[in-house]
Image 1 (cartoon, one colour):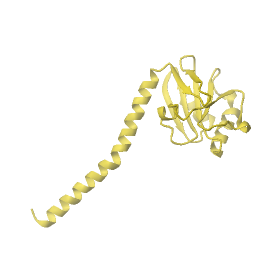
Image 2 (image 1 turned 180 degrees about the vertical axis):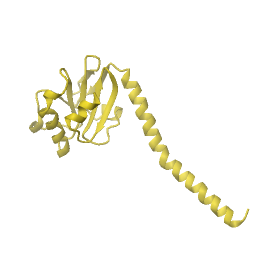
Image 3 (image 1 turned 45 degrees about the vertical axis):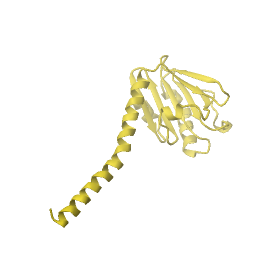
Image 4 (image 1 turned 120 degrees about the vertical axis):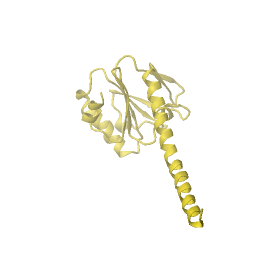
Length: 163
């Protein structure tokens, strides 16, 4: 093979290695998401360790559950919680809503008596379990469907479509 042939072959090999390195994390993330979804579809409860060292079990077998992961310094998170609060009557009856943060204090300005607010302890694995990397993120659990993950602000209409 000529020198030019070796150069072209080297470029192709480098391109394949770079492509594989770029695609592998995406593939692993998709596979991890499938594994989590599969495991969660068989799960009857989610356990959250709070900053008060209380283990809170959220039942997934007694009806629909909405988990909203948020941060008090996030304006979009505030908007998301207000959107859900303002259109609560459009959401299914009996829907249990949990607003979950990993901050030490809950912002009283967004408190809503219809939501259960949880301060997840740093060692709680609920953020890792759902691979929460940005907020707001909504996890929706319904007895009829597999868990649904919605990232970013969502109108109630979009949440309803996920049921």
